[in-house]
Image (cartoon, rainbow, N blue to C red; front, side, top):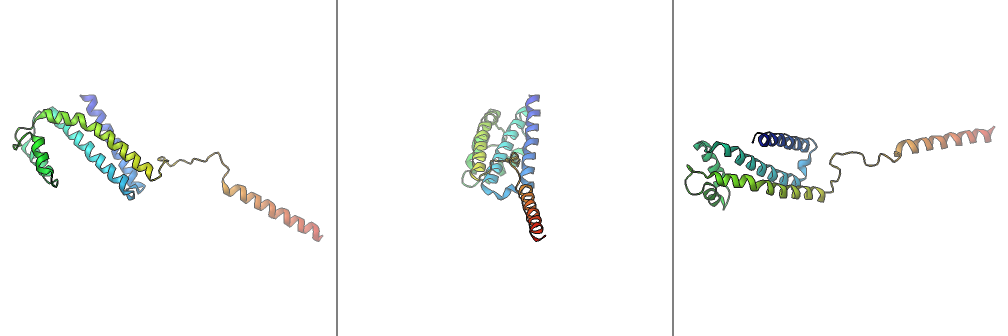
Length: 165
């Protein structure tokens, strides 16, 4: 359990670094990829929440009330999702089995959402996530042509001086 929790914390550090990189480079302008990433983050946070609640064996009424209010705010589905999550209409007896099942199932959904995130990224033509130079073996344009032009100009001036003298 301890290794699982430490690994999850490290994973969140990696995720936050990834988000910071996206903010720094302005990748939020690519709306489809960014929104799929936000959906991915919300699913990841839900998974972490269910895993965090599991060892307690119980939950405070405050936390249960907050969760209930958030879920019931979902249009059309909110009440049904809340009733299903708590196992009934009462918030004082949440079922940990259901939380364990969600904590187990959601990582597979995260894998699917990650695939969608990557597919959307590559649909936009981004195949160089590190931004490395892919043509380092080629001669750069500027030095070659600058030296060639300088050599040609020098040769022509010398030729003109030879002809005039």
